[in-house]
Length: 389
Image (cartoon, rainbow, N blue to C red; front, side, top):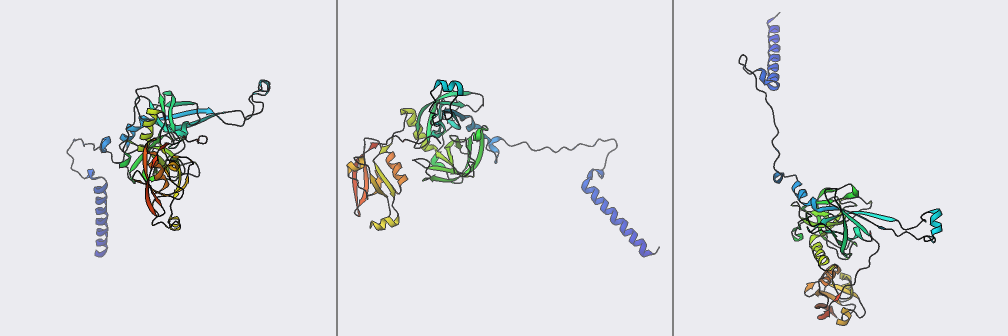
């Protein structure tokens, strides 16, 4: 064997030995450690760090849920259906031989959610959850306790209702501050979708002050992408501290399921309505008897107005408060008691806040001149709604 061949064999052997040493030192370093005769080698155990305390979990909202969830209840209702009445429905002979006639009234059931707002048994929910129903039960968050409930009062124009159960040891939710809510805030929706049981979903505040959706007369919705489905109506929309900021009431959907566009009534509106219902059994709003429409730039130009500020008075109720005060169709309402009315929803809110029987000042633009008229505020008539949704 030549010297060249011997050198190649040595180089290959050395390379293999170094490679083996590298592998052993990387994968099993304990094989290379010096070992005293008879000494036991320690067993190394890797233990996961203890989870942080609840308040320190950056990606958990369990504290908020733990605070709010006990105050969210399930609502079960039932009432007589409105089927077409059979001509022999009251004939006892027909019933004896043929049973219940077709088209006879059937029992209709509904399912929704509610929020305990007082330890004395007051529960806030949506009007459409209990409207037209004559039996209402509230199931507490423990999924065991069912309580019969009675209706304290309803407000169809905001789709809110207050129930009362005979318990005075309930855990009420903490009411939050609607004015502090901002677009982009994380929110949690708690309710009973499709009757599966209490469920929590998470999202953000997508928009504030949503109006003109055709859902209620008075609209000022919080829009959220937290999943809201059938059965969530009347449930709680809470912030990350577990405080109530809204009452879930409706979704925009072509299928009946959540597509990320849900609406909640702000807690500020809910508080005002709830307090009036508990105190008086109903909500009282101001009324002046006018029909208003948006004043578009085109309409402003056609009326030769200097701007499109305010709302156009399209109609005036005969012998109503506004007509008695001298308001005429074609007037432009600029403000109510100094509160600007840039659009019809703002006008509705401004008038509703007035006290029936009190005097109010209306700033009008007529014949390109601004005038003030005094009106004696009336009481808004009770809304006659269609059947429950």
